[in-house]
Length: 119
Length: 107
Image 1: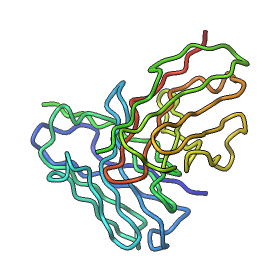
Image 2 (image 1 turned 135 degrees about the horizontal axis):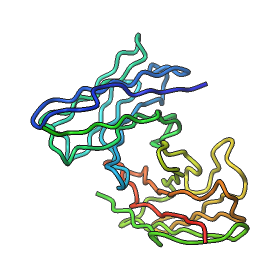
Image 3 (image 1 turned 120 degrees about the vertical axis):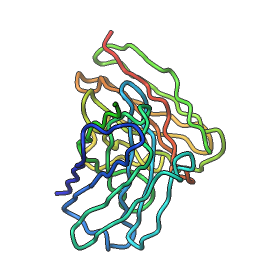
Image 4 (image 1 turned 180 degrees about the horizontal axis):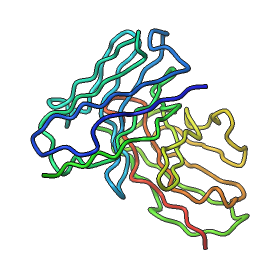
């Protein structure tokens, strides 16, 4: 059974840095073709892809957020970490991590974590 | 970036109805398209990938078609649990992009 779970602070102040951790089980990020991505969803709005890391450490970022994002993996801990700098209230959203198993479709998702950016 | 446009933005239908949702890509994406279902307060769930392949465990009343720029998701006979918001996503190239969503409501 594949599970993913996001963790991190629920409230962040403007200009601060957000660090989110995705802890997963049921698959290995050292298996060829596997990846983990981050997607966010502001309240009442659509899904927005943020970043993706593959088994071979290839990393992809949304161009509009690339300067603010860093994605890393720790295969031994079954974790993927997303760092976002210089937070703004518009970054308030539910942040999801999701597995990619061959091709860039998000097969399994975490439950999501709501991040509020406010002073 | 490839823009994904869904229509309609919302639709009302009754149990047993056949419903079709459309997704149009701003440029050709071959069959690199997925459909997701999202219920309130829950994570999206993959329904269809590669435009027409049914994800394991998804009921056969869901089907997808299309290639190039125009795609459809069809629910052949609506069930109570199908009322949700549906998103398309292109997997052809980076950045990965989603449609704006189609809300399926009970009439």
